Image 1 (tube, rainbow, N blue to C red):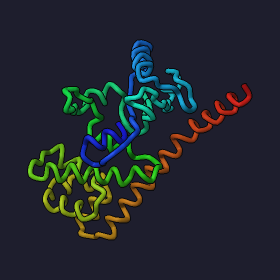
Image 2: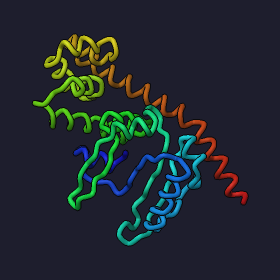
Image 3: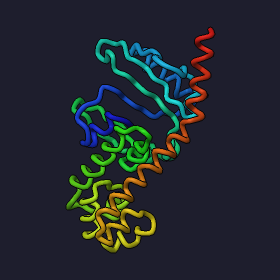
Image 4: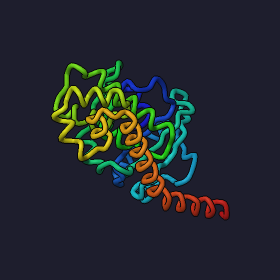
Length: 228
């Protein structure tokens, strides 16, 4: 659901970290613990590997020690801001085949984009590349679902103007939902840029507010660990 998913979707070239979403049930975490043991993975930060922290929305961070995965960092989450439950994410997943015959389940592209809307600077250029790449890949294979996704998530002003011109009827229907689309329909590039900036600012602030109590909880855990 992180950098590796972006690589498989063609929007990134390299990532040494692996971010995964899991069901935080007792049985499933036992299975995960067995896989982590094979990887010789150990927790490298707070919080500890415990279902209650995953269910609260925390990420648990591991570093792999197995020679074939040495120094790879694995981040595990069960709940994320701005996305649906795991069951819904799994229902919409994309399955990507690897060269060795294995298949990797990824967050669907719309879900990955939603999960990337964080306060981190590095995530916003990645969102832009993910949607641009999808538009380029399926330029001649548009569908109602893809058109809606492009109109809802494109962050490149020139491309958004192009999509609005190509699919003007769909754009008019979405104009009330997204200010950037309304500005593109009016042909106002500056207004499009401003609307995109405002979108990003709102999402980053929402992410800061979401993480504020979780960060306080992490700080309390650090203090407790230091006392012990």
